[in-house]
Length: 255
Image (cartoon, rainbow, N blue to C red; front, side):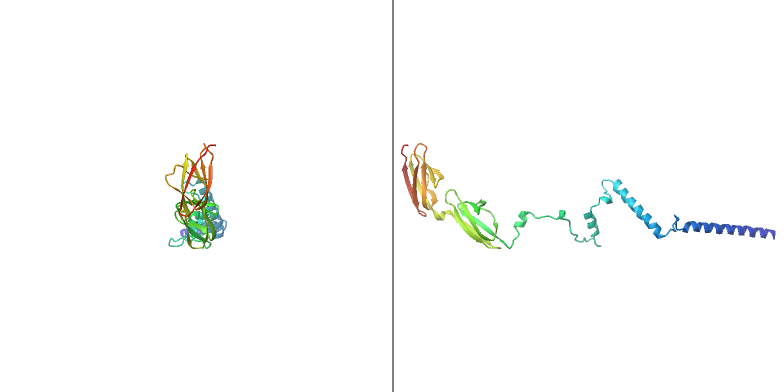
């Protein structure tokens, strides 16, 4: 009987101690300000956010050169990542002004516009071509010239002839062929001088005598000047018809 009483006392004391330990452990574990797994979600979220922000700062400073930190990722790259759809197809995200490619002038000139047309230019034998006061090129000119629709003046210059001037109406969206032919309005001049002389037609130097063949000149009344520094100049006017050949024979007199 005495042994049973002792055992009962010991068991009772052990039970009391176990209950105290259990209560103490539960209080420490589940107490709102505690650090165990039992703290509520509201108290844990600020700390998680703080930890993440610490990681970001650390990455931006200590990241190696080959792996850029998150703080160095450009907004455009982030937008491209966010635009990815499931399945790997990207969504078209508007690009910034710096990324837009401005087409070159050469590329845009090939596109038809509602207020422009095209001109193909040719000339016989050859000429320097001017559109208004702007030099276009020397024939033959490859390709077509894009000009604004309307009436334009083309001037063809060749030192052997008088300039040819044509007014042409250019229609939008169409191609117009502008052709000039100096040979349609020319005659021929054969000069024989004694002694030699430089030949000027309308004050434009042409050749020096003796001539191997007649000069082609624009038909009409042409001013002819023969120059030799040892003599006085010979100046005369000659009427030349289309496809006619005129022979001019002159001899210099002493000054």
